[in-house]
Length: 166
Image 1 (tube, rainbow, N blue to C red):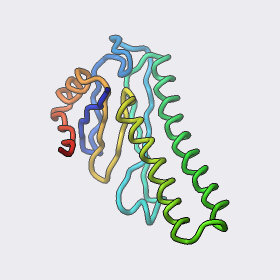
Image 2: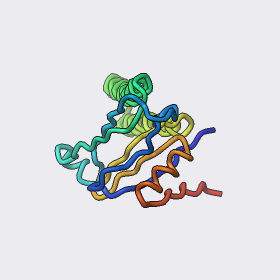
Image 3: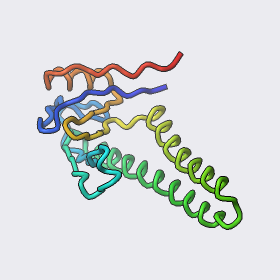
Image 4: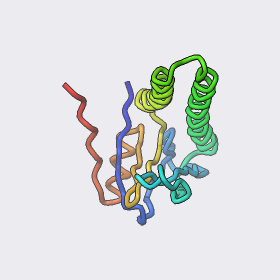
């Protein structure tokens, strides 16, 4: 089972990457992968337009960059499709279910969508993924040695993984 390794940097600090492809590890890759995300925080629920885009360029081979971009896009598309299918089913079933059953179904669908996405990210992490917060950005790497080199080049340490409940 794969896990990702998290390195956190201040949002204002441009990251310094090792001169290797973030996907396959080849030295001096010929291209860059552009990875984008939107900042998250409590205000995004109330005011989605306040969520700022955050983008970086990471060294990658041309084919690897395209594959990474395609994989991250597909993950977002699949999650959106699961949510939309669930919402459509809940609207169709709204007249046939009581209010309590309908609410439970809706909560179940949303939980399923996010559960599937979280499980997928945990078992099959992307070579590089980002989560931007108000003041920091978490860089999540599939390759631990790459993450360690990235952390050292940026003068920070790897964040410990959250402990699993016993």
